[in-house]
Length: 303
Image 1 (tube, rainbow, N blue to C red):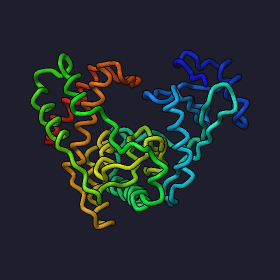
Image 2: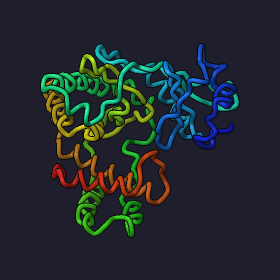
Image 3: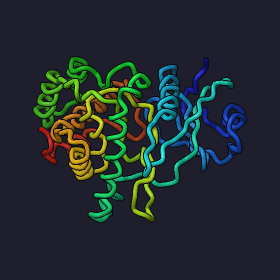
């Protein structure tokens, strides 16, 4: 089965021939390629989002996501996608109706009132709590490999020479030592989203509230604490509020420092995967990722 080789292949002619016939009402002329990570190419058709996998692993993730989204519990305050995987043509792809709303950026979050921030945290907690509680039912639908899917500590150490600068050497060493000794209590192994960053969120700017979540391809079983860490890409303030509300709602304690540890390791993993060519992130370079790590370290949230 062939896969799309690169962004350049996503021409109107290609999309009109390989995608439009399988999606009702799709107009290839309205297509706009979106920034993507390493799994699938995404194309915005206005009311519809189409994702074309780069390889067999990405296709399997799209199939898994479709199964997960069908089985998700109801979230009264949040819309979730209903992706359809199409494998009838020459190139497989998945499509879903767009959830109206904007991405939730750090700037947008920072401009919210205290009441709006707290309301957003409460909405997210309802989502996380329901998802974690559904672990027995949803667990078999996620990835067979427990989350996180980072490189091993040994692989990160091997990739570090020439990439980790002297000013981050001690911080990197602390992170790797903690990573090497990481253990997860069985009670904290839950079915999670693991991708709660702002580009996967639909935010209603007029109402000042979160209305939807996207991209469930990374769902799987892993440490409860790790499920909250992507919120740090929006704001550590949001992460703190969510953790506080989560414990109040569920009675389950969450170690905020452990959540921040996962952000630290995620940052170094992204840097070293990009630096060694293992991972391609649109818009991210070694320099931008080093800047991100320095900023995160300067906040003093971990260790």
